Image (cartoon, rainbow, N blue to C red; front, side, top):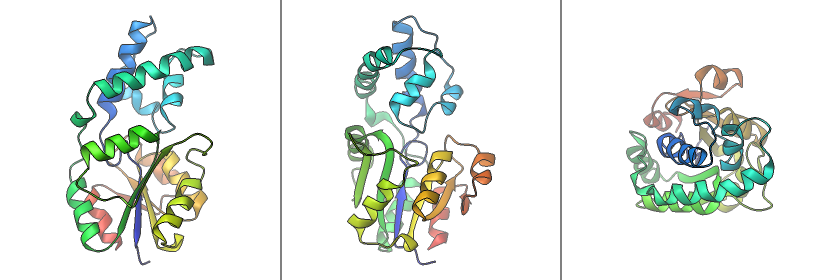
Length: 215
């Protein structure tokens, strides 16, 4: 295939956000008297937006009113903790640079709240021009719905047949399949190789530079 557009997931694919996610959620949980969780357990919570993450972190049966009340506190703390401290994964900057040099369009599709997706991209990867950055927005379906990929394809003017979606979670592979685009399962992130394999990821890559091999 001829690849002209690569769409990236953000958390666990471009950025290693697990530490700040676990710290901010645990601090709010502890503040309100709820049990906290070890870092690795948050790997089971991420991938479907911050509201779902918080729902999974809270005790089973916690009411939606509690989640609605705590979510802004988590997001505010996330911002205060300093998004500038979030590291991109090793090889991400070099890979993005080479993709742009080769004329490949790069975009981001994430279930992270849209304003935080923009903030993270601008603060951490601000030297790169992304053709589109789409996060969670009111009235727009989250992944694994394919809507975001279709929207980005309209923006980039690149056919789905020449588009790759790269992500680390089951949700990402399902999103790619629902949209009919090639999927690249990223093994350096939060997901598990066996899950990505079981869902039929078209490619499994161990480091970002391997995306260049798809070209």
